[in-house]
Amino acid sequence: MIRTTLVVTAALASTAVAQSKTQNVFLFMLDGVRWQEVCRGADDGLMTKDHKVDDVAGLKKDFARDTAEGRREALMPFLWKVAAKDGQLYGNRDKGSDAHVTNTMWFSYPGYNETLCGFADPKVNSNRKIPNENVTVFEWLDRKPEFKGRFAAFTTWDVFPFIFNVERSKLNVDDGLEPLKFGKITPGIEMVNRLREETPKRWAGAHFDSLTFRAAREWVPANRPRCVFIGLGETDEWAHEGDYDRYLRAAHRDDGYIREMWNFCQSDPQYKGTTTFIITCDHGRGDNTAGPKEWNNHNAKTVGADQIWIAILGPDTPAMGERTNSPAVTQSQIAATLAAALGEDYAAAEPKAGKPIADAIKK
Image (cartoon, rainbow, N blue to C red; front, side, top):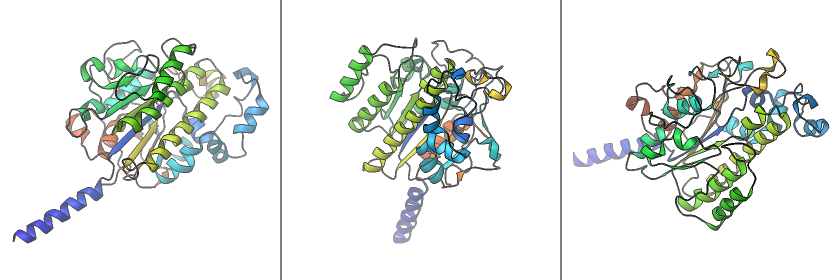
């Protein structure tokens, strides 16, 4: 009888392990990157001098192609050749895939709150530096012994410490402007800190993505986190300036950063075969069919700014590729999907949160 019990217990344990291979998660958010560029590639109608493109021929050489598939692969090769191929991508409305926010604001803080907490909060209605009353999925995970102290966020905006409410949560959150001081600090991080100080800031409260990603790329191998958030913001800054050239090139660089981190994970014993990447944005932007400058904007009055996209890649995500004619998914489902990849039920703990995306994580 004892032997039978041991065999059954071992079999159940083996099944549980097989059901959840993910031990680490990385959530990347590319601020304000439209689904149109992600799924259709560069827009020929916006690659003009009217949209601050000085070298039209050069930009078209880099990103113009004869088909939508060719254009999007030129712009974001990792997203399409790896993430969408070996994982899943939602949000191509041309193919019957709808991904959208549920908040009514359609700008950054409400979008990050919805993504990280799993629900829209009408009280989150500005981008002001107000500590978030809501608990993010990462703070929730950090309260569990197996995840305690194993989270870090690397961002390009000085509002993120308030979104994560670091005063309450005590999470490690780097805003990308001040020197990074938490965890083990390597000589590479010290150099990034010096560059942050010496590099002129173009935008109030935000810095360049390179100064965020390089810190993350150095910090992760040195400190071995299990949960990582990387928020990159140049795309939104350039779009607000109406600079389509720099918007595209920032998106292309961000795709390269994600590829670099993925390649590191696939070469490292802790992360190889045990890491899930989720890649998305905080809001959409206007559809320029409504007007030549609508792509610059996003708010509750901007048609299309509620439209987003979501990519998921990892050992527990079936390789279903680009989703077509599939049920709609929402930003509010990301938090529970992230937790589900780790074998945790966030939606049960937070009833307001959206349920995990049904097909994204194997049962």
